[in-house]
Every structure is written in C-alpha cells, then in structure tokens.
Amino acid sequence: MSKRHVQKRAAKAARRKKLLTERRKTAIAESQMSLATRMRRMAGAPIHSCLISEALPEIGTGYLALARKAADGRMAMATFLLDVYCVGVKDVILRVDEASEIERFLEALGEAQPMVAIEPTRARKLLRDLVAWSRSIGLAPHPDYATAEPLFGDVSADSSDESFRFGKDGKPFLITGPSDTPARMRKRIEALRRTVGDGGFDYILEVEGDDDHFGEEDIDFDDDFDLEIDDAIESVTGMRYDPEVAPDPSGWQELGEDERIMLAEAYHRRAGIEVPNMTVHATVHVIIENQVAMGDESPTRRTIERLMGEGLDRHDAVHAVGSVLAAHIKDTLQAGRPNNETYNEAVERLTAETWRRDFEREEEDD
Image 1 (tube, rainbow, N blue to C red):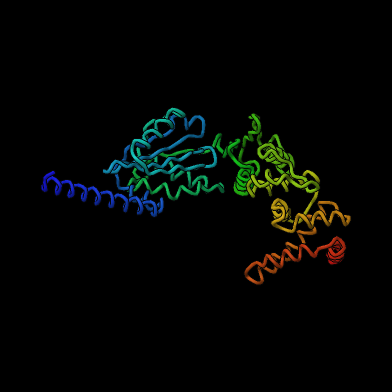
Image 2: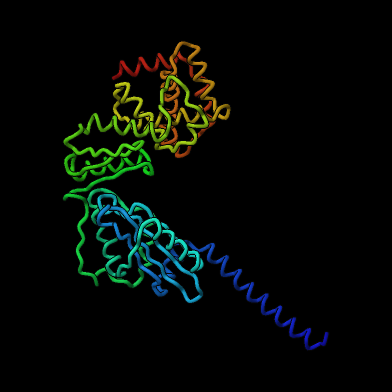
C-alpha cells in the first residue's frame, strides 16, 4: 500500500472519528436537555402536519396532533387527547425522534381514529379556549400540556376568529371509563360540584360494561353517588378493604396510594362509621396497612398481632398504632425532620392497656 493511500485512509478515519465525536456530544447534550427545552427549540422548524380527529365534534373525544420537521430529518410531535365535553386536555404524548418514527405513529393514530388536517391557528385557538373553559369548571389540563403547547411557536391563536362551544346540551358532561383511576373520578366530580353545582353537569360512570347515563335527577349525590364510586373503586382494583383482615401484601402494594385511601374510605362509608375528616382517617389506615405489608421491615405487623392477642380486634389495633403515628407526625412537624427509630420504638412499646387508657382519656376530654 502506497504512502499516499495510507495518508488518505488516515485522513478519512480522522474525519469519521470527528463526526462520530460530534454526534456523540450532540446525543449526550440532547439526553441531558429537558424535553421542554427540546420542544421549544423545535418550535422554529417548519410544520410538517397538524391533524385532528374527524369525529371529535360528534363523540366529544379525539386527538389533536402537531408535528414539526427539522432540517436534519428529526421531528417533534405533540399529540393532545381532547375531551371537549368536560375534561379538556386529558393526556399528552410528546416525542422528538426520526421523521420515519413520528410518521409511523401518526399513521397508526389515523388508523385508530380518522384524522383530518386543521389550520394550526385554529388548532391553537381550540386548545387555548378548551383549556380556559375546563379550568373555569375546576379541571386543569394534563401536566404535560405546558410542555407541549409551546411547540406551536409563533402560530397565533388570535389569527383565528372561530368560536368553539364545549360541553354537551349546555353543560359539562363527564365521561369516565376503565382508564380513569378511582381517585381521578372522585376529584373531577368534586371539582364539578364545587364549580357548577350538583345539577350543573351530567356524567357517565362506566364499570364492567355499564354504560347507563346517570343525571342529577336519577341519583342522590350525597349517598347513591358515593356508593356507585365505591363499587367502581372495588371493581377497578379487584379488592375490598376490611380492617379486620390484613390485605394481601402483594395486591395491596400494587395499588396506587390514592386507590388505597379510597378503598379505606369505601369501607368506612359502607360500615356507617362517621369521622371528622374521612380522608385523613382513611390515610392513617393506609399508612398503617402499608407498614403491615412491609412485613418484618417494620414492627407494625408484629405489634398489631400482639395487640390482638391482648384482646383488641384488628380494627382497634390499627387505630392504636394510628395513635402512635399521629404523635409521631406531630413530633416530626415540631422537629422539622422525622425520627423513624423513635417511632418504631414507640410502636413496639404500645400495649392494649395503654391505648385503652389514652383512648378513654381522649373521649373524656371530648
């Protein structure tokens, strides 16, 4: 091999190494860059497509997708799941990827729900007005909305003079289904009750194929609705909480914290137990049951079993440990930091006799 040929190969290898180094640096920088920053940077790229579900006005839910394509072939996409009947922006999908990957996603989206082109100015105004309306009835958009919306860049919503109407038959119409967690159901209902009142909205609660429409004339919101929600919680989670029986640890730990709290609330409502603050009371139950599910990592399970041997039923044993927890929380707030070792020692010292004495003293003070 000639010297000149060797030099050419060496120069080519050097250029390739430099290119790979630059690409690696770019990849590292992008991985460290927040998605919000990447979306803002891509907001200056030409718009590749702006699409909306064709059936959105008729069925109330659908997608709005905006994609921009940069000169290097990459694309940024923001897809919004819209609920124009009530919730507003329910979900957001954000991606920055090769153009072929984004185009494949949009194609699949179109197969699931036929999409049609929409003017970007009209699309941004629809989003802006929908979010403003849903906020007015107490429902905030998906947390990623603030990250996704800037992809519209210099597209002006004010350039569109179109007006949009939201809700169904003149009022919010909440459609909940299996993909909504029980906690999310209750929070949305409570928000609507605060902002528009019991008669100011309709809803559908879908549980195990039940698609009946319940309006405010069909139910008592203070009683029947709570029972409907409780049934939905237990159906979705596949669990019914009873403090007299320790929950299956694996099943309990698979649930979200809000689902556990709502299961504890459901038990107390079903049992007709009234407490000053149901959520706080249920949360104490959940914290104790979480510690029980930890097994030997916490002394709580052993203490509850010991208290039951001393004559307490399991529900009272949970309350007894809960009294120690309440004192621990108070001490933590005063000290500014938790002392779990002190808490565990207090749990281990707890007896049925000391709890009964303190419980009776509290009742006398009340």
